[in-house]
Length: 404
Image (cartoon, rainbow, N blue to C red; front, side, top):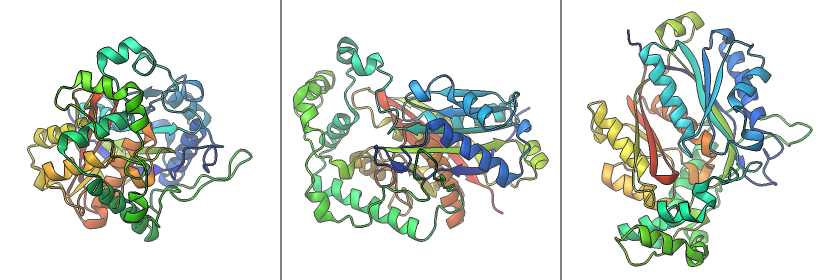
């Protein structure tokens, strides 16, 4: 017998700069998750032994983020021996996939109450640290066409005939939205400060937002990926994709997602679990979709997943009140906006990952939670969160707000 998959609560850490100077560099990924698990139990009054599984996304499962981090964190959080844990990897779409998979299990009746989310400490476990063949083996890279995401972004901009000015304009827009949202306390309900410790300074806000950004400062930034292109990445991309004869390198650090350290968790359960826990459901996870596209073009997969999940639910893009779309570079956001007629008021209304940071495995879970909050803020009904991942993977989740 099927059940509804209900979002009962959502918590996240601030997003810290993914560098040795970042405020969360002194806090391990496990500790980021443990802090959220303890806070989730405290604020909900949850009997943690009712949780039947903890599923986390993490893109670089090596060193501190290896050995099934979800199980390790759950034990360290004091949730008891009988709460399982699993860590999954679908690259940048790992966290949103954890949410989608957990919701599917709840709908199928295989799970009554679970925690889904993600984590990434990019400052401590850098991108490509797992040294998989997709990143390090020359023959695999050549055969797959596995280029850097920035090369794929510039390729997409070239395919679409986009100019530097429109890419910069989107970069400014997302910074302005994020700064305004942070100023008015839009994230206060879900944000759980990371306390100072012997190893770190702690953090109580998203520290990557740059309120002073202007078109002039963005215009002065050099292309970020031209060097990679000249070093052989352009040749790989053009050899695998025959639609253009050159790649115009237009994206800069101001129109690319900023790397971040962060974690996020959602409590997801059926009606019986919600009643037993005494929690009012905030939203229903209606459906999820996973798609893939050409691994060189790569970054269009999030949009294809959005289109698939909307169609699966029998809806149209016009029915969606909020799109939380991982800002994998300006070009893909402009393409999304054009194709789905998603104006600034519906697409990332509180800013996105270019302004607030991309914490790989955590990003998708943050976007689902942000989508719930944005729907509550504007009394919307339907929202979609989506992420594009490496090698042409995309995942989207469709949610419906439950009015209070």
